[in-house]
Image (cartoon, rainbow, N blue to C red; front, side, top):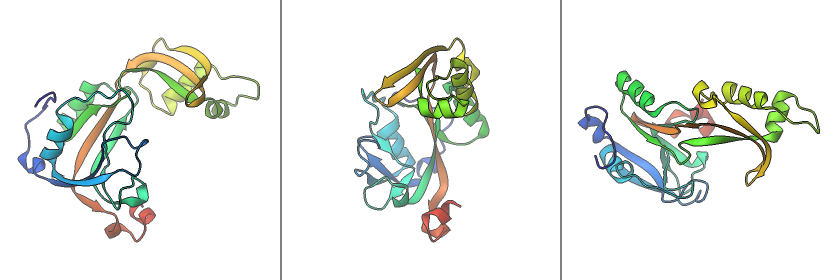
Length: 212
């Protein structure tokens, strides 16, 4: 369908499922208070957002939340109903393997790459890694410390870290970081449609209660 691949037969019941999703033409980091709820079917959402590839030069392009919000803010406390489950896969799982697993499960999902897809380096907070590795003042962590963190905490797949190299400490736009160069990695988002909306107030008198 346009530039989107359909991996299995389309279920018309799912396609006609009604959604209410908060949408922003700019990303969540640049426009936290510019979201508007859009009522549509799953088919409408796919046609409008997922069938034509849009290449943004900057991260934080158009963005959808997992459900609807009160007002126009993306804050967790403003979410009043959840219509989808969206998962970020940032550890190097292969796109085709993810699609194949979902197809075998019999579930419906939309799978697409994110802005940082094929990234070949990772920045790690110096303060965080030093503390994790027990590094004292005036010392620096090593590539081995960084690989241990990426494998254990971030769950990077082994093929991503093959032949990894160490740039050491760098002052980046995001602060003082350790930089690791590695294999290019697939970065994906998977969107599942819930069988029925999860209404926050129906599942607890407070936002925290509904989460529990």
